[in-house]
Structures are given as C-alpha cells and as structure tokens.
Amino acid sequence: MAEYDIAFGERLAETARMVAAEGLAPLDAQRTVLYLSLLSTEITLKAMLERAGKPVPDIRARSHQLAKLLSDLGTCEVEVEITPGTKAYVPALCLRGFPLQHGTAESTVGAVIDAESEGASTYPNQVRYGDVFRHYPAEVVAQMASKVAEFAREHWHSLRIK
Picture 1 (cartoon, rainbow, N blue to C red):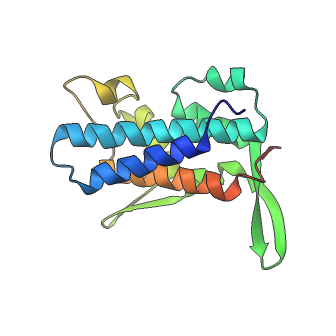
Picture 2 (cartoon, rainbow, N blue to C red):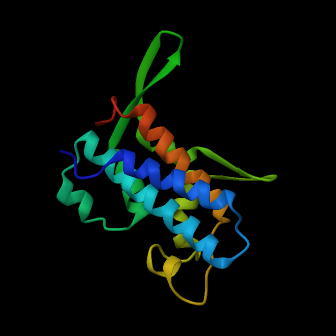
C-alpha cells in the first residue's frame, strides 16, 4: 500500500475549490483555501515521487518543503504524446511551467510553489497562524493545486525515475 494517496490530494484540491466558490472575502476563507491547496500540492507531489520510485524516507525528509519536493520531481520523467502516435518521455519538472490565470495576470505552478522564497507566508505555519499573511491570491493557489492533481492523474502510470 502506498504511503501517499493521490486521491487524497485530489480531494483536498476539490475541497479548496468548493470553499473558494463560497466566497473569499473573509480572511479565514482565504487561509482555508490556501492551506487546503498547499496541503493538496504537498500530498500530490509526494504521491508522484513515491509512484516514480523515490524511497519514502527520502520523501518524508522533505517535510512540508514544496519547492524541494517540486525540485525532486526533476529526477523523474513522464510519457507524453509528442505528435499523434508518437510518445516520448520528458522531465516531469515540466509541471513547473504550467500556466495559471487570474484575470489578466499570469503565473505558473513553479512560481506559486516558489512564492515562499519571494516573501510569501511560509506553509504550513504562517498560512495557518499569525497576523501577517501574504501569498498569491487564494484562487490562483487553488488553481495551482488542481493543475498539480490533474498532471499527477494524467501521468500516473508513466511516472518513473530518470
């Protein structure tokens, strides 16, 4: 049995979207969506790494460090269709460049995951606690979690260590 469950990550992303759909005006709603989205991303990245063959103790050692978990995905690859009927393995780190939209603004999965290094509230503690709260808009972080979950599900059977 796997230590990390992709379905759990997907459910957390879905729950974050449901909370966001109810409204993000109160700060507690924003915190809830951010926390669920970042937790979803953590679980999903860990599930992908485990599926690819990375040892669970190595994954567990990353704790809640999303940027390092994403970086670890750089040791993995996934199969994609290059042209109709032609498949090839590409670095799984391509997930980093997946686009995110918020109105007219654009970002990427990698930029949101790397936000802590740019001064965003640290996950999980500063997202859960404290007076100072700074991060990407909750809708963008929820979108990011969904993209990570979709990527994982789409490439689940082809994930492997390079």
